[in-house]
Amino acid sequence: MKDALLRILAYPKPIRAVLAKKLIQRLSLFSYRDRLKINAVDRPHYGHCIFEAARLASHLKYPRISVIEFGCGGGNGLVIAEKHIAEVSKLFPVEIELYGFDSGAGMPAAKDYRDFPHYFNRGLYRMDPGALRQKLKLAQLVLGDVLETCRRFIVDYKPAPVGCVFHDLDFYSSTRDALTLFDADAGAFMPRIHMYFDDIKGTHAWASSEFAGELLAIEEFNAAHAFKKIAISRSMRSFYPDQWWADQIYIYHDFQHPDYNVFIAGEEQVRHESEIKLR
Image 1: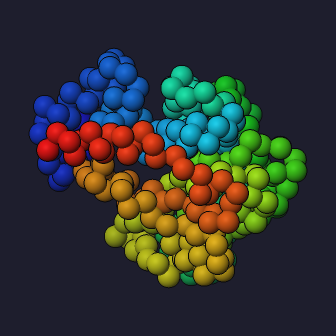
Image 2: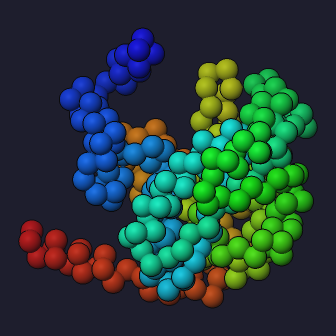
């Protein structure tokens, strides 16, 4: 109770709006699309990425896509992702698969300063795979060293094209290894992939920077690839101006993907033209 009150006082919002959102979320009032728009859902950043991935898949006529979470820990993210997938699947004619990558043994030892050894202890976020599988309805766990599981993922699991990725591996080295997933053929992916990076802001003690962690892994990936880039989603702050995660949504672009240039903005342009006429 005290912590919740302090958060409200530190980041003031109209208390009526806060309570209204909580009520809407608890009672599942209004449509899922409306609840997502006002962030009256658990982990709205997960919901946004899954929704946008399914919408793009629908435009491109992809019947199936995959969602991936890197770094699952106790599995709360996968459980919540399943709930979002259940809702989004009602809105678009797209089947959604879900995969959770994790070592299963908690965080490994940091390799050097780029992994923030001053902040993370070895063994944090250990998983109980058996207990987690009991909670899951859809997700498949992909356990092991992330570099090896990424190398074999497409062959071993034959997933639908990847359309959405959540990164929560904390370390530079682990995130760098996870990004090797994009070394696979273009057919394993959608041309644009919505991504969320959990560990790019940090805390006062963490002192996150672009010279370590996920931000460094992103920078090095972009430097190493001429036509594959991971860029911040520049529309998010305008759509969600008061959300802490708005600056943590990125989009992977494969500019040479066979479907990258397929026109998808018909509905948006019609709506834009209608708004202009009303001015």
